Amino acid sequence: MSKALFLVIILMILAAIIIIVSFLAYNKRLNRIASGEIRDTHSNIPEPGTTAGITYKTVLICLTIFTLLSVSTLTGIVRSMNNTIDNMKSSQHDMNMNILELQRQIEQSNSLLSDISWEITGQDAEKKTVDLKFTISLKQFSENTTVTLGLKDKEFPLTKTTLGNYVGQITTSLFEDYEQLKVCITENGVTKVESANFDRYLFWDTLPMPSIECNFTSKDSMGKIKCNGWYRLVFNAPEKIKKVTVTYLADGKELKSFDATKEAKDNTQIDLEKDLTIEKNLALLIEIQTEDGYKICQKTVVIYNASPDSVDEDYERIYDSAGNLVWENEKYK
Image 1 (cartoon, one colour):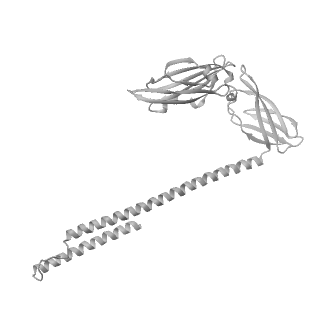
Image 2 (cartoon, one colour):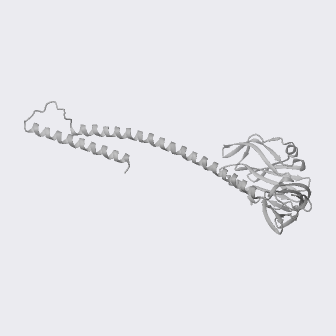
Image 3 (cartoon, rainbow, N blue to C red):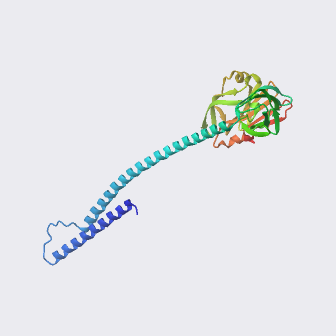
């Protein structure tokens, strides 16, 4: 039983005792008056109803004061506990970061790789391939150490330039999904395989893939949506843009289409028409023709009503010069 409940019970018992004692004293006095022992003059003994009312109010006041004190105490305890929890979360986050850093340091100390770098040196749009030059440095090596790169199911041997340094030129698919690069280091017949970070999609470094910077506002008006704002098309390789076309799709229907090549190359702001009116959603369809002959199509719902389920209509695709689909963002499939 908690202290609060115990105190409430004590108060209730005291109130009951006071009321009972008052009732008995009052009845005793009435009996004495009825027997003629005393006259019914001014009495210091209040009526039981008065006593019960005063006692009830007194108990309520006490309970109210006690409740306020308890709530204040509990509020302080809860606040203190929240601060403690926040401190614990912060400490746990710091601890996790320290653990991750220690793991990284341990992995680095156990790794034979001192440095690894790569760069794109060429591209064949017809074959959809890209040429990469790798440079690898080792911490430990000998005269007979050999290094081989593993990319997907292919292996590429590297050539030793100086002790501990290896270089190699490889050709691989531009649109392949790469998750990891493996480095196989062989010395005296013993091979150690290590993993290295690598770009998942190489075409992000070679094609002008679009992204949107925007500031849109919308307002419901008579069951429709009035849209205002601006947007900017951002590309990682704008010099490879041949032509850009932007199409406004209002509720799935084409509203407007225009050439935005200059705005795309100059990275300038494009304004929506004032109070552009739609019913459910507004999407931007961006089509980019590249100097290499590829066509990049990106459809993005930028303004929607009620639910963001409209993003299911988004897509991001790349076609080759013959119109064949060579890549599609699996996030929108």
